Amino acid sequence: MKKILLKSTAFLLASFMVLGGLTACGGKDPVAEESTAADTGSVGTGETKDAASQPAQGGESTFTYAIAGDPGANVNVITTSDRFGLMTLKMIYSPLYMYNADGINYFLAKSIDTSDDNLTYTMHLRDDVKWSDGEKFTADDVVFTFEAMENEKNAGWAYSQLVYPEGAVKIEKVDDYTVAFTMPFVNAAAEEMFSQIFIMPKHVYENVTSFENNDVNSKPVGTGPYVMAEYSAGSYVKFTKNENYFLGAPSINNIVYRIIENENTAMTAIQSGEVDAWIGTPAQVGQMDLETANLTVYPYQEGRVAYLMINANRVPDENLRKAILYALDKKAIADAALLDEEYYDLPWSFMPPNSKYFTEDVEKYEQNLDKSKEFLAASGVTDPELTLAYSASDSLQSTGVIMMQEQLQKAGFKVNLTGVDSTALSQQMKQADNPYDMYFGGYIMGIDPDTFASLFETGAGYNYMYYDEPEINELFAQGRRETDGAKRKEIYTKLQQKIQDTACFYPLYSNKRLLVVSKNVSGIEDAMLVPVYTFEDTSKLQKK
Image (cartoon, rainbow, N blue to C red; front, side, top):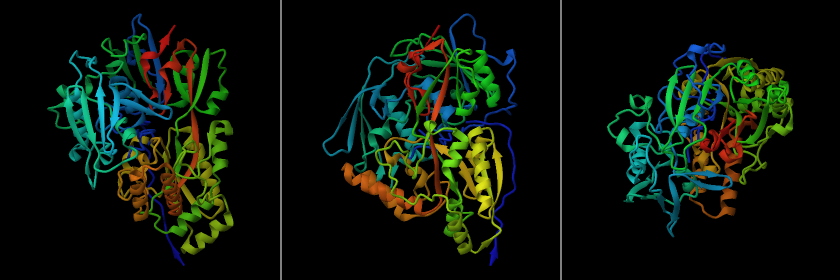
């Protein structure tokens, strides 16, 4: 029998930035949910900042939203894909349209025409939009943005969903307010794919050589409802209303993203009225006297999937991976973290349970300790020792990893828990030689299954499992080319089965997001609660 040590040197980094989605926002970046692409520039202490570190408000109306991580100083359309960076982008910039489960909501575009051969999508743009510096928005800005995303040297987060082995999406200016996008092949996910990219101003960025590192990012010019006025690393981002906003100037003068990394500090701030909105967990919300604090809770589904991923570079034996998965009890983990089934659904594959493509006809790896021990014996590994990385500042993950550690111990595994700053963890997971055997995370992708490709195709930018499975690649390719709904369902059922068979991916739960808001804030329904960004259009918010 061979003995293998699957352990890395544990290290802790102190700053925390929030996804994990993994957004993200096919080939969407899964880090859209809980990680930032930029350095936070500060170490979070968990303490409330003093008055000197707060943005000056004057007598104007201000909506303050407590967020758990720092968007960073280099937020930009091309390389930013984390939740807080995307939330910042959504304030400053606009997409062509938003593609939601209930249909399309148009922003910079007015309508879309699709050619008979399903290859060309013609976008008809609004002609009444101005950038926040007063310049006119035109088709040139759209073409410039998409071409920049297609340039490999720019390391754009959406590169893989615009450039394929068959060729790149062709972007053509038809006239000042019409742009045509031509796919290199029929792709059923194309319409959703085009909605994910915010449009940046050509006249501001055309001479920029690095989208991630430049002076322009600190004074962005956008078409969104707000303009970024101040950024204080590790403290806050302040936005002032854009009087040129094409859907009408917002009624709230200022919006502040207050960076509070410590969850207890944030909970105190929302209850005291220091902030107007915050995302809480079921356990935290249950501790609060909502009526006395004048608060309302809005639960909403983001299609998020929390997962355990196994790094096949460090755990190459399939028997060993199956031994790990059969030791786990996902419902117990979800109950411990989320308290009640009303706050979560149980996924059995990479697709969220509310997807029309979701299937339970997969290997579920329901807890079976005897089977776990059988696979462990078959692997030939004795005294297995694993390192599980997770976000140290996320209470749901902290609860979940303790449960996993206990469950795996019963099957003969020693598990070292490594709580890491999410920014650092996100960057390290992208390295094939990273020191982690397993990662706890989550993602919010899209509606179409093809938007998940960047997580699971061989060599894809966010396949942190580092396996090589040609059949998975082929099934993704078949699915994106197929336009018949029933046939796509068959393909994606096979794909879900195959991914589960690798035993590298274990879906844990699909949890609702709980937005806690002051009753002094109205217009939540009109602003629309959506995945990743929280609000589809913050201009619709009002405050007493």
